[in-house]
Length: 175
Image 1 (spheres, rainbow, N blue to C red):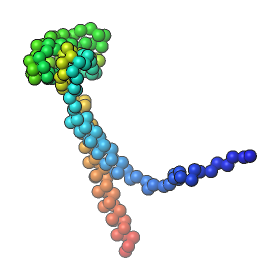
Image 2: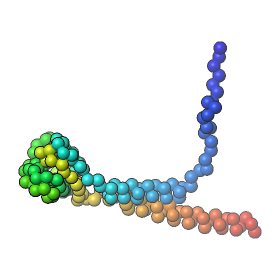
Image 3: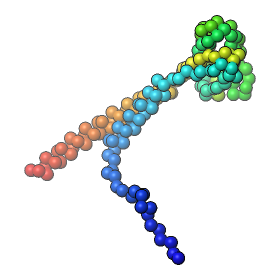
Image 4: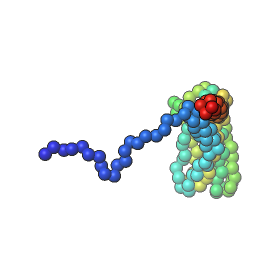
């Protein structure tokens, strides 16, 4: 018995969609870049270290002159240890800090050269909240804002020019 390729009765067809105008592509791209950059910079969640957790380790890729700032707030009295490592796991900075109940402390590290850097926070099992802030010297992470604004402005400009041109053509056809 031959099998016949029949479409599934509940599948939709490919359908057609109108072509996207170039100005709409630029507007969509610019808006996406602006919203993405806004989320990238504004949506910073603190890291919660639960009671009894092991030390917290994370890292970032830094370029020469970039600074990483850690703000640690503990719920109970403890001695916290803050250690910064380079990409070869060499200790660059290590410090033990005595913190009282509810006290917070800031520690910063500036990269002398580009590479992957790691930090480790050990609160000896005491619950705490960690806020991480990376300051870029070259501000490359701000690049999506002007790019998004340029694409959005160019798309809006193209839309205005195209609509004016279409109105002129329509006026000629109706005469």
